[in-house]
Amino acid sequence: MNKLGTHPEIVRLAGQLGLSRHGDCLPRIREHAHKRIESLLKGWPVTTFESFLRLVAGALSVQLEFIRDDKDIDELASKYKTLSPAIREQLIAEFRRGETEGYLVQHQNPLPGDRRFVAFVDARGPRARRAYFTAWHEITHLMILPPQLAFPGFRRVLPAELRKDPLESVVDLITGELAFHQPIFLPVLQEEMERAGRLTFDCIERARARATPEASLFAAALASVRLCDTATCLVRVERGFKKAERRRLSSPQIDLGPEWEPENPEAKLRLVEVVPNEAAKSQLRIFKNMRVPPKSVLRRAYDSQQDTELQAIEDQSWWETSGDGRLPAVPILVEVVRKGRYVYGLLSPQRDA
Image 1 (cartoon, one colour):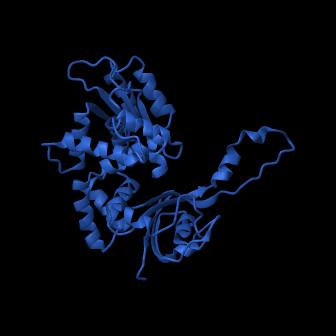
Image 2: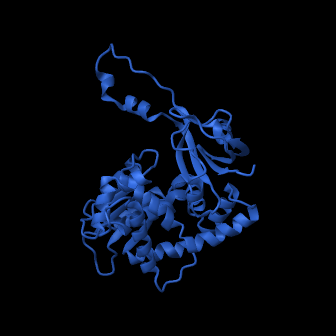
């Protein structure tokens, strides 16, 4: 997190918001967003995530439009023909030809009663489960957009295709906090954790279904791990390359001549997402891009090729780095769930095991 908070773009953003530019700027930007939420909610009690989203969108003059069917694109283009001269072509390019999940546009010729912005959110098919997060992603852009800057328009594309720039990473991070507003989500999560005895994927799924059924399991898991007092780390696994291998594969030097024969590295099963809560940061040394141990239930779930749930007591010493070798021994409770092609894990150190 420190690297992201000291990135030149994030430091510049902090300065544009009138915040200190010294040290890690990320906590100050996050605090700025939360204070804006508190200000917007003042005097408006909210008990559901739907009302929370609508209230904040309205306060920021954002009209939310969810695309649930292909024909909605044409209907919205007709509805918002005064939004932009090329709105039909824009929506077709973004949602039919492109991989856009959310598209935030500023009204160029608003009529009396029109809101200043329109957020188009793709809620078709499998994207329906990400629509809630996508809507918040677009709103979060406005939450941290310096008011003196011209509005450039924002879009959110599929995470698999997105090579996130620092600003997008910050927006996603803050979105995960705002979308699962603690006063609404935490009481529900605590009830489900008491039933389960600890944080599990089952209790996350039940809390998600009760509080915000429009959200994805991964988004709910991110929020749940962040709010959990027990040391827990959320991970996602898929096949990938080391940083050096990715650089070689994308290097233009592969075209230098027929005698130059690049290596053909094999994609290994790795951690592509690693999100520890504060309690886990001092207890686990497992990081993004590490190779998954062959005997881990994470690998078994990935190799199953079907939806499954597995659990086992493993050890941190099964993991290793190229520089330091095997990690220190720490018993870890590993719970894994596979949903479609996605494999997620909850890792909790078991100091008393």
